[in-house]
Length: 197
Image 1 (tube, rainbow, N blue to C red):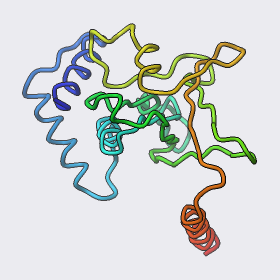
Image 2: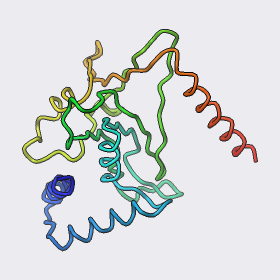
Image 3: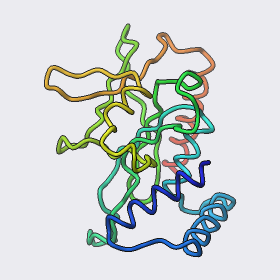
Image 4: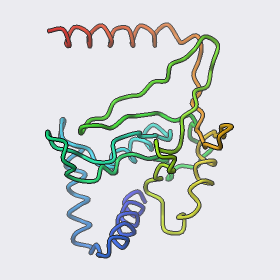
């Protein structure tokens, strides 16, 4: 089912660019994606983020750069990672509506964590880019095109700001669990050691 959704999504994008994707091309692409996932340190593709959303049963929001650039700043290719990845192969009631947030830049993903102030338990995550355009909703089917806002509302807890910006709500516990704090403190200590050496 995941492979069928992925194929239809890629075929839809191919048609928008005025070319077609035949069975042989799709099979080669699928084998490449599987092989990449098996190799530590290799670049990931959108399909890997989509699969991760299913493993975690949580939506993933990726904020990122629009273009992949070389060392001189020249745009090499369109970076297609930015957007929302929903675990569409699960039923909504079996999934968390609180998203995980990643940043994508220079070929790497980073976990993004909102700054939590005292008693606040929710963080608002805009579902649009800096220009106010809705983030792409990845791996939707042709019959779901035009229903993106409704899909986002079905899979995420959402609200609108006073300026009319649709935002996902990320819920957090305050105070955080002591084990979580130790884990983060340990990671930060290790990170600081590696950056100073």
